[in-house]
Length: 239
Image (tube, rainbow, N blue to C red; front, side, top):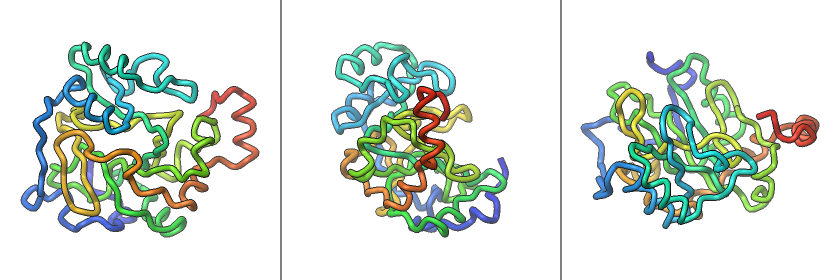
């Protein structure tokens, strides 16, 4: 795709050399780049790693959605036997904000101005090594405030915050993460906005270590009450 839309040309709290391969301080791990090699580390830190068997979003039945079961040690062991499985993280007590700054009309900067700043956090992306990386695109992870935890399994969450800014949450979507390969052939990495560190390996922090999502952003992610009520009554069929 082409360069970022002008509105998305600015970011908050990200070093100016993000994505510059000559300036990157990369921490490479000794983990084998496969679901079997990485999932145990993610799981040990409290994450819920799911295998992606083929294509985009092909995950085990019954492991996603509002009624999906949480990952167990037996799941990780069983799924690790699948040849060629990629890896994604299900958001449990956490939320991801997926920004596509390359898309025309991206509203990321407008949302930051309207809702407020976000704390620096960990970002997953397959574009960090791109020569034209925009310093914005990727999925940022945050810890849900305690007041919203009981509602994470209810179909009251929006899927989209603005143009080309989507929400990855408990009931819908997952975070593609190291060692998954994007269809372009580049591998997902982690970037720590606070330290400037890149990680070629499993995310080295626990969900509880993430910065808390500011309350204004949590509120912005909730559907209007009337719409949320309709969704609940329909069995959560709408996203």
